[in-house]
Image 1: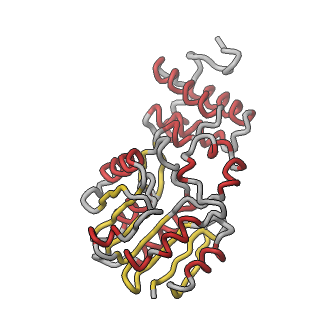
Image 2: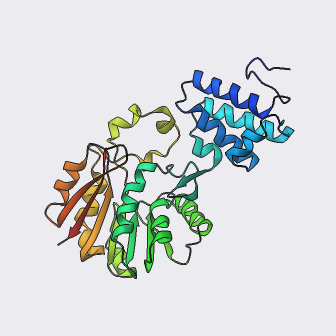
Image 3: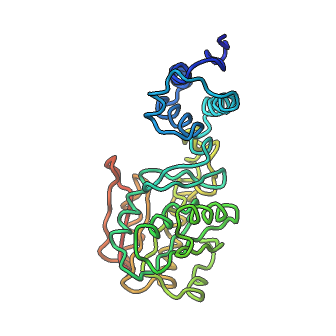
Length: 294
């Protein structure tokens, strides 16, 4: 009745599946096995956590058991949970993710919350390096911005972001532009004029540090969304250098940063920006730098 490699079989109950699967993931070095297994079962059964408790003696239908086994094998091999489920919650919204996008992190909510707090009715917001669209779409959802223009270099990435805008009901507010941020950002002014707010979570990992990242990141998430050049500041320099082309005087520039990049990014902004502040995430790490264009 029990498969030697999985310690459960198709006749195992939901409670047994949870117990065995959590034990297996823990042995594989997965940090939050209970959270991951619960998320897999909720996704497969389209249920809440209470259902898993009250129906712990139920047996999964054959096709759902097969799906659970597949999910579990992928997670054992360090595939990120977001890619396994094809979605990730961010700012209490659902975002589809795949191999063309980074998986949104809770830490990024810091910069989003700062932008939301500073947005006025009718503002135009620019989201550079949008990825899944998590930042721009969240800003569109929770503010009265006139428009949110989301920019990314890759067509497949933008397709995911556009899908997320539809899912979250902000397609009428968001626009999606394929543009290499490292090329001529002044092209944005021709189409939209200047923006009130620019927000960006650009690639900011030093090139030589990428191979030292957790294997769930370096082996699966797109390197183009991680690599910030030799010192990790490539995109920050370019965006700051071109800021006056797309940002109004008095406009706000908000960056997500790595935990050790606050001083460097503030220094890059010194010449053109004032009232620059650093905000910390819930873990106490520096996570956002926000300044006002002189």
